[in-house]
Structures are given as structure tokens and as C-alpha cells.
Length: 253
Length: 235
Image 1 (cartoon, each protein chain N blue to C red):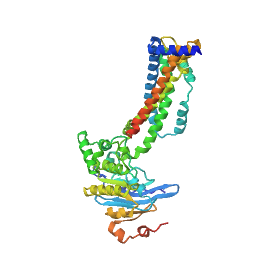
Image 2: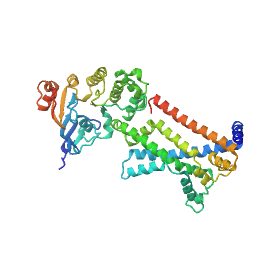
Image 3: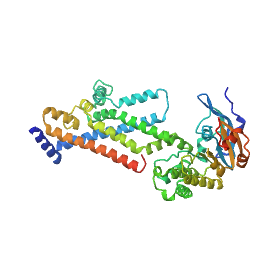
Image 4: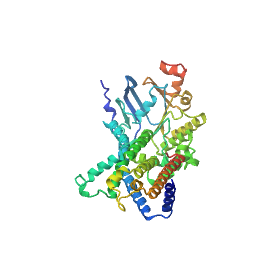
């Protein structure tokens, strides 16, 4: 039987708002396995939430469902209380594990995003330059984006997402392929965006990274949310068996 | 063998002196084949883009058909266009048979599958890479196709040059629908066939050299474009 989404959760919100981002009863099955198994989640405005869990737990998939990139088999995603729509997509920034660089210069990548978000032409140049400067990429503005190093590309991807001034930035293991220095640069950039008022949801399986960044932790295991708790409590007294085992570095079945 | 050497000499003399018949034939060849490639681009690229982006039942069969059409024998295309344009055919009233327009039409039919198939492959590969990124930026279907076409422009240009290579070099289709009429529908390939059978090797060789030169120029252009694209990391 199909899980019927709770329609009462869908209420009219301000037209352009995407926060809070909610998932209600999200379920995705592939080949008889539940990759997401009735996940309920709410990302409220404010905190830097780290979504954590072992490989294959469903954390990246959850993020993609929340971003409306993947349709759940059952369940419902709401942005600001209403069903996601393309017009509000720019209000929700998304950074992929492997950055997607358009075949143009670094600054034109940012300009492209600004144009897609209907930012007036007169403002695009200034905002693109600002975004690059914040990411420390002003020197590389005119370099073709695809010849930048992995770390630079990821910083550019974040700068491109932030230039639109989204309410929330979702990051899917953005540092998984990067060395420590590049990882630090990404974390600094994300923290600065958070301080400036952007709500963040950051997927990682790296405990150290979670400790450095998180206000809140969402711990995903076997397609379910085992815990959603403030970070200090998660690390000192995790309430689920799975999270305890993960923190202690034990392998989980 | 002596004839052969003399023919070479004569061929060079024709080339260097820009012999009027020779220039006329080369110009008509370029006009017919460039027109065919432009028309094929206008038809083939949208077909390729649509096949790359759309998902529908029978898509697999359509792709197999398209790829097979790339190997269409020119004489068969010539025959079909001839039937269509001949007095009793559906397009007979247009009176296009044995005109450059008919030759352009035939070559266009030969080139469309190449342009469509290469565009489809190029755009589909790029869509795989771009689609989710463009969706999170709020780009709609029309904007997505426009972005894909623009960002794939270097690869698409190589598809057009490949199509031009096929058009300018084929003889089977143009000789059937054009008829190789002197000063009207005589192009390089049909002239080479005729002059060779007449034994006038000089003109045939001169045209052959030009055809070779064009093939080299087209391939060099493809390489330069790819290099430029790669160099700028655009390709």
C-alpha cells in the first residue's frame, strides 16, 4: 500500500520562500531494498546541519530528494510549506560531490547562475565578482572553469551557488575528493556563508568534519533517520546504537 | 606512363592559371555541398537534440535507424530523389531534376543522418553531465537545450565538417539527379568520372588534387577546432 502523504502539512507560504525544507514519509525502493524508508525530516532556518552516516546509508539520496532532483516513490517534500517548483529552485543552492563546471570561464559560470535566477543584468557583474572574491578566486575569474584544480572547482561551485544568495545551501560530500588544504578552504567558505545567515545542510561521512562544522546532526542509517539532535549531544551521548558504533569506529552490519 | 606525367603537368597548369572551367566546377561543388550542409544542420541538429533530450517508446529503434542511415549508399539516395523529382514523381511539378537544387537536396539527405547522429551523441553526453546542475539553478527545458547546444558548439561544428566531407566527395547521388550537364550541374566528382572515362586525365587529375586539398583542409580545420576547444577546456 502506498504511504499517503500528510497533505495538512502543505499550507500556503510566502511565494518565494523555501525554508523550512521538509520531507514527510520519504520512501525510495530500488530492487526490493528501501534506500529511504519513511524518512521525516525538517530543516528549519538557521543551523548548520550535518547529515552523517556510513556509505550507502541514504544521506546523499535524501539530500537530492529534498532538492527535488529525485522524486520519492512515496512521501512528500515541501519548501516553505508548499510543493517545490522550478521558480524557487534558485532559492535553494546545491553543491555536488563532483562539481559540474560549464564550458566557460569561472566568472561566466557565476554569471550564468545569476542569469538563470533572473538577477538583473546590471547587477550580475558586480555580484559575480563579489562571489569570486569571497571564494578567493578573483585571480582566476577569466580562466576556463574546467582547467581549475579540483579544490578551485569546488570553491567555484560554492561561490556560484552563494552568488544567488540562497536561503539554504545543500552540499553533498563536497570535500570527498579533496586534500586537507582544499577541504579547509571549503569548510571556511561554508562557515562564512553560515555566519552571513545562510542555512546549511552538509552531507559527510567524515566524523572530524562533522565535529568541526555541525550545529545539528542528522544521523542516517539504513535509509532511516536514527537521530536528529544538537551536535554536542550527538558526540557526547548518542542515543542510537548505530550512531554510538559509528562514532566509536566500529563497523555496522 | 608518359601520359601520366604529362597529365600531372597539365593539371598543375590548369590549377595555377585558374582555368575558367575548373573554377566554375569547383565553385558549383562548394555551393551545392555547403548548401546541403547548412540545410542538414538546420534539420539534423534539432533532430539530434530532440533524440538526446526526449524519452519515448521506440527511441532505441530510432537510434539504430539513425545510425544505419549514416551509411546510406549515395546512389540509392540519388535514385530516391530522382524518383521524387522526376516528372511523374510527387515533386515533379517543381521541375528541379537536373538542377543544382536537386543535387543539394540529395546531398542534404546524405548528410542529415550524420549531423543528427553526432549531435545526438554529443548533446546526450553533455546532458548527462549538466542536467542536475542546471535543474538546481532553476533552468527550464528550453534553457537547457540552448545551453547544451551552445556549450557543445565545437563538437557540433566537427559534425558539420564531417558532413561536408561526405557531401563534397560523393558522386553517386549528384550524377543521378544532376546529370553532369556541362556549365549547369557539373561538379568535381562527376567531372572526374567523366574526364577519366574520356581519357582526359589532366582535368580529372587537377580536380582530384583540389578535392584532396579540400579533404586535407577540412580535416585540419576539425583538428584546429578541437585543439582550440580542448585548450580552452571548452570541449
